[in-house]
Each structure stands twice: as C-alpha cells, then as structure tokens.
Length: 88
Image 1 (cartoon, rainbow, N blue to C red):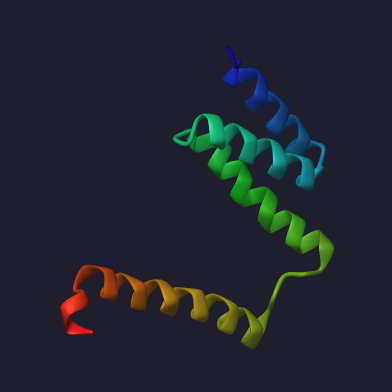
Image 2: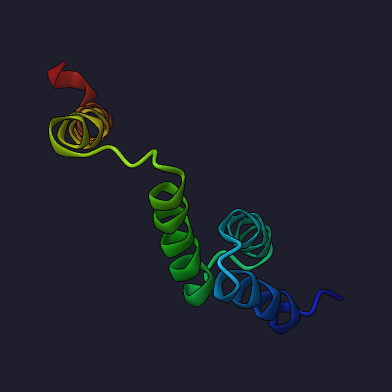
C-alpha cells in the first residue's frame, strides 16, 4: 500500500529546499496515484513556475502572450468542434 502522506511530505520537502525539478517529478508521481490531491497540484504549479523563473525560460512580454494565446485558442476551437460537430 502506498503512503500518500509520505510522498506528499517528500514533495513539500523538495519544494522547500528549492529543488523544483525533484518536486515536479514527485508531485506528478503522487498525482498519478491520487489525482484529486489538491495540495500536490498546487505545489506542482508553483514548482513549475519557480523552475521556469530560475532556469530563465519564462516567456515574457509578447512571447508570453503568444505562448498563452495559442493553446487557449486551440482548446477553444477543439471545445467548439467537440460540442457541436455538425456545425463544422
């Protein structure tokens, strides 16, 4: 039997030590076992953001707009197609 609390404590410890890559990997493993674990999802999001910030890969300005806009439009279009395929 898997101890969810033990895995989450490792996720939190990695995040607190600013080992964001490890926190991301551990949180993903935890979420495979327990997809509804809200705290693990929160740390996964924060770790991903912090990892981008420290690696210098965070898109900014116009690039951030484009990187966020394209996936949003893709989801929007796919949502419309999936909801009403006869209108396409």
